[in-house]
Amino acid sequence: VPIFFTLKINKNMINKFPTPTSVARPHPSLQGVQYVIFPYDPRIRRWDSFFLVVLSYYCFSVPYMIGVSGGYHMYKNSWWFGVNVVFNTIFFVDTIMQFFRAYRDENDSLVYNIRKISWNYFTTSFVFNLIASFPSAVLVWATQSPNGSDPDDLYQRPGLQLFAIIDMFKLFRLVRFKSLAKSSGVIETWWERQGVAKIMLIKFIFGMVVISHWIACFWSFLALCQAKTFGPGLGTQANWISYWYNSNYVAGGINPIGWENDIDRYGLSLFWAIQSLTSIGYGNVSPVTTAEYYFGNILMLISGIFWAFVIGHLVSIVEFINKHHVQYKIRMEEANDMLSTFSPQSSSDGEFDIGDSRIIRRRIRRYITSQYEKSRPARNDFSNTVTLDDAYPALGTLSLELKKLSSLHLIRHYLEMVPYLSSKFLSPEEQSRIAFSSKILEFAEGEAFAKHPVYGRGIIFVTKGCCISKKSTKLRNSIGFNNCDKPIGGDDVLVEDEFMAGESYRLHFISFSQCVFIPRGVVIEILAENYFAWKESA
Image 1 (cartoon, rainbow, N blue to C red):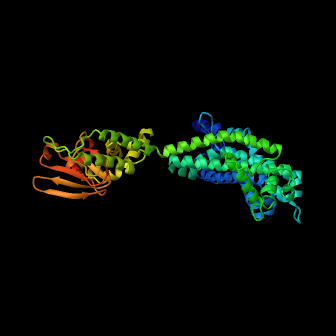
Image 2: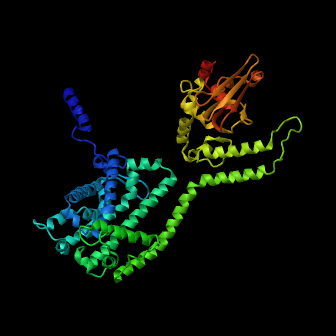
Image 3: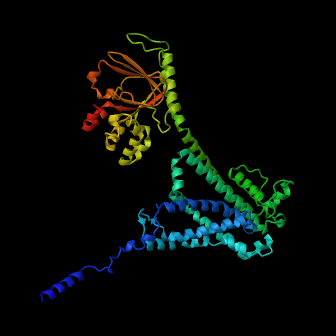
């Protein structure tokens, strides 16, 4: 009985534990998560960079193939055919990938449930993407006869004309251009490294090029729709190309008539588009039919608004580029107002000689000009003593942790030159506190410096320019030439003021100079909390 009872108890206990076949099921929201493509996957970021190139290609090639070449090169040029087949395949692959790509909803929350991703994509852009992925290039190639086809006969086929409508759907993918640029690691990194003025100029030029290209292609497409051909019949029908050809064509010049002359036709169309956008209007290319006149009217209305936008955009770019220069001119004008009140003659009244006023004026103007030429453009206060936040305004926009890390990277190179402030003795937290308290000083040519009027003595690192240091003691005087290779005052900053009465350290700057200044107070404060650094420094 005891044995049976023991076996029965053990059997009941075993039944309470899960067997190897009873595996816990994951949460419903995590089902299929292994198939989800997350936005920050390095592979998908590279894919987005490549797909951005494909979109850029279609942004220019689709309007050109429809409006300028009329699909002529799709079956006459095997290279063009092959490129379009490859890019159509890429479009199809990207269309399928969208079923697995996590996205952010209206609350900026990441949606990674595979069912929600698929349903959201299926109910939004799947149909458009699927149509855009249709192999229109293969359709064009398949409709030609084995012995070759006349372009006029080929264009009249209703099935072939569908390729234009199908390819137009590819342009709907351009709405993803901005999001792809953000997702692309290569584009995002390059974009962040550029200056604001350069970014504004690039966006403006790219927008002008795209709009001019599209208008040119549509202008050529109007002639194709009316003449039903780009062949010799184009010159006999009423359209803007035939009018230009009959009144302006010169033998050996540009010839827009002929399926193979798509480059000449595009050049003439682009010439009209640019002169219309810029309101120049030479008049040698003008509308003839009703459709062309209505399109010209609409374009002139849009161009009026667009031209106002262009002027405003250019003014903002120029204003941003000249911002630093304008601040310099204002600063110089204020200085000139002040200098005009100086005494006209040199003055040496009383105990102190204040120098010739003409020399002082020249030094002040030269100092302000040196600040403009050699200071960082981000600074706009032209102050002699600034904090890191003032010298680098981007620091003020960062979180506390990023601000500490950034300030440490800015100053750490100089801290490592001073043994008791190096990472060997101080923690990153202590070094960042020193970096926070550091100041950026600027000195004019011929200026002397012994200690700061507010912060007193400290450690100086000459980051730009050079100076001559002169140290006077009770026993001897020493003179040295200092530039960016070593700190100044690193030893003296540890000595109390009462013991420095018989010694003095003076710097004479022989050019406009910028320095990093670490006040003695913050050094003593940090070392007072770090006994190990004190001991080793002694």
